[in-house]
Amino acid sequence: MLTGLGRRIGWWAVPVEVLGLVGAIQLSLVALIALFGSEPGPFSWPMFLFIWIFFAAFGTALAWWDRRRRDPADEPAWRARAPRRLSAAIAVADVWWSATVISSGMSAYQGGLGLWYSALVNVFGVFPLVLLRHLADRYERAETAAS
Image (cartoon, rainbow, N blue to C red):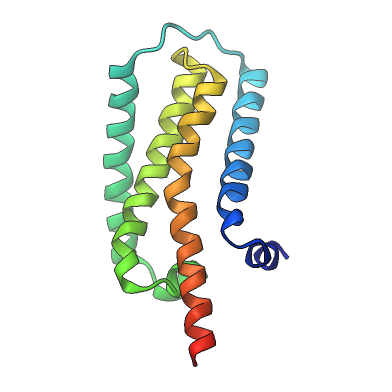
């Protein structure tokens, strides 16, 4: 149902999906703060960057290990039909979004980064992956129409 809606609205599906993902991420962050409480200290860019680099390195190692051991049939459908030239960009976007979402969430929870700034950072983190997913879907539709 959502895939059909995304196809009907075209490129507008990208910002709609980004806002939906960021909204879900922010709601889970608000629920986490409501459940466990938070006493944020002052925001620190060096700490944010340290967390980001740590999770980017961890995500890269985990993705490499997963690619080595994964059965190709377990790959998500949109990645399987993505053109080969997008595969490196998709791998980078995977690490980018996970490191950005984790570091902004941790910074909002304990580091003094406000929820609005966290949402803005998450938009920049989620946008590349959503855009590449949309491009892979358009490539698959163009290939189907050509055959």
